[in-house]
Image (cartoon, rainbow, N blue to C red; front, top):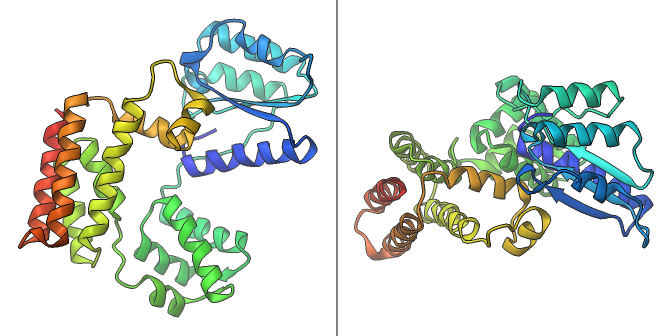
Length: 308
């Protein structure tokens, strides 16, 4: 339950790892409501002639129609021994009947809410450090938040790296030594704002990043990754989905879902124009422009304009 992508993917990964610890050949199958038809759940959960366990992951379960939700609940009443069903629900009122039904059937519930409050993020950082085998004070955790920003994926990576670099004892001095000069926002935040069409916010984040020492080349790299993600997901074959799509694109399912949401409002021509703008920016920040900051501002504006 919840829409904090990092926590959702971890929860799914832990379930899959637990199953594969008992059955190394167990298959993990990603399912999205758009690719499900009535009877498909029953088909996937029926005994196989060839044996072997399965982990069925139903993404965006809040979007299941009435018939499919009923099929999931019917299966959950008498689940198969060799099939584990994971329903990913973003939370909220939509599809609540499915959640209530699974809860009544004693399904295990894993909460993955958005981590929005400063105190919650501090707790997350401290838990991540412990997860990696280290220790950190609350003050040092706040310092890491100020240095790295609020993206849980970046925070998790920073925590793991800090424990590796320091031997496990993470204090204010270690945070300052490894992360001094990092902006509260990253190039990926700038890229997301631009791709989603928020020009004023993208420019504000860009100026803040530059003012706090983020290298222009890193911002261009983040912009390039964001726009290439649009091209890869937008150009995927129609009908491709789930684990097969993730494998073909070399992207985790949560990232594909995120890019699919960002694609709304984009056309193929628009993505092509954005790619051209990023390519020009790459040349400019590597010596082709007298003012890299101005070149980046123009690139952000060009990406937002291309979205229309």
